[in-house]
Each structure stands twice: as structure tokens, then as C-alpha cells.
Image (cartoon, rainbow, N blue to C red):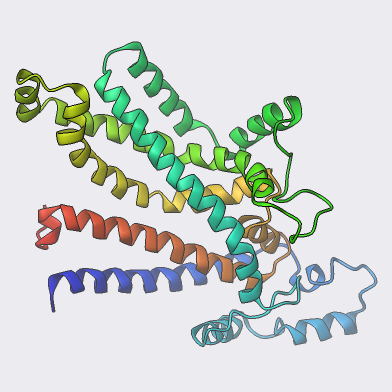
Length: 327
């Protein structure tokens, strides 16, 4: 087998193993949850009789042994059926399709912005190393890396939504408007604060990594020779530094997919943003097993694809990985 295809095949096997293990872990944790899934499915209706309770449990298959419940879910999942949500009474695939657009818009814009901003800041810090600009950028990066997403979201909410009233406090569209009436400007207006919050997650890593890589390039002999020939900082960046620093930064940024998905859960909760993150929290709090497992699987695939793309890009530019040689 070609080494390139073997590399991808091994990654796919690991991904499948990860999905199975993650589904078992999520299912087990939900089973140990103190929340009663039967009562949660009827909004904890206190008038529920024992006969009604047993009928609902039988309808959802909750009276079956846990191993059999998981086996039924896995069999249906392999056939493309994610099940029916116990709290929304709709197919899980339909709910995910509705919520995924909002979440992927939020995560996609945040991912691109954090990569661009991080690379620019890292480059500036490297070319200005040792200066006050470099120290400020490093301090900001350490601060960003240590601050929780939800805390930063609350600060943005307090300053820009409550105090300055520049942006709405929550949700993705204006209250009282139908989707057909919402313009692109309205959507962007509601998306600014969640994007700002989520973007911060990835900026610090890219900034610090790019700075170190750029400094290595700037200290290399060919850059020293280029300076001796009279090349400006822009020419050095364009001809030497950019191509040597951008691919490692891209590889690192693809590996950030896991933090991106986890951060979106917190950001969506803070801003009441109707995406997969908020739906996942709702499913967990109401013990909606089919919906939770469906979103967990989608999230795991999202993270796995991001990491795999990063590995493929890295293998494409790293001769040791390209040749299948372990360093």
C-alpha cells in the first residue's frame, strides 16, 4: 500500500475507534446521571402516574438493559438513523441540521479570524522582538491563553452590550422578526460578540508559535545575508519568512478544532446563541440520550477531520512524515 494512503488509512481506523469509545463513554456517563430521562422527557410533570411512567419508558426503550439500549442505538447509527429527540420529539438528524448552520458559521468565522490575527501579531512581535510592542503582544497572548471563554464572553457582554449598547445581548436574530425578514446585516450584528469571544481562544497559540518560528527564520544565515544585501523587512518577510512560518501555523491552527468546538459550547451558552453547543447543553441537562450522542458524534467527527487535515498538511511539508520516517 502506498505510504500516503496507509497514513490516511491508519488515521481513519483511529478515528473510528475514537468515535466508538467516545459514544460508549458518553452513554455510560448519561446512565449514571441523576436526571430521570422519563420525567425529563415530559418536563418533570408531577402529575405523571406510575402507569404513564412505565408506558413512556417502554416507548423510548428505557426499560431495556443498558447494553441492549446502546446496541440498538449503535445499530441504528450505523444505518444512518440517529434516533428521535426525547425533548423535541423530532429526528435528531433534523435538529442537528437546523442548529449546525449557526454553529459552523460561528466557528468558521472565529477560526479564520483567530488564525489571521494570530499570524499577524506573531509576525509583528518577531520583527519587533525585544521592544515594547513585542512585550505587549506576548503579555496579551499569555492573558488570552489563561482566561476562560465564558468569562471573556461575560466581559464583552457587560461592556459592549449592556454598557455601550453597541450589540444585542443574546440570540442570533432580532426578537420579534421572522427568519424571512432578517437581513445579512442583522445576522452579522448578532454574531459579532460571540465571534469575538470564540476567536480569542485560538489567537494566543498561533501568535506565540508564529513569533518563535519567525525569530528562528530571522536568525538564519540566509536572512542575515539578505539583510546584508540591503533587503527591507517587508522583502525579507515576503521572500523568506512567510513561506517558512505560515505552514506550521496552519497545521497548529487545524489542531485547534477541538478547543474551538468546546469553546463554542460555552460561547453559545453565554450569548444564548441557538447552535449545537446550546442544544448539547440542553440535551445533557434533560438527559436526552439520542440528541446528546448525535451531537457528540458530529463534534468528534468535526474535531477529527480538523486534526487529520492538520496532519496531512504537516506530512505534505515535512519530509520525515512524508517518507514515513519517525524522528
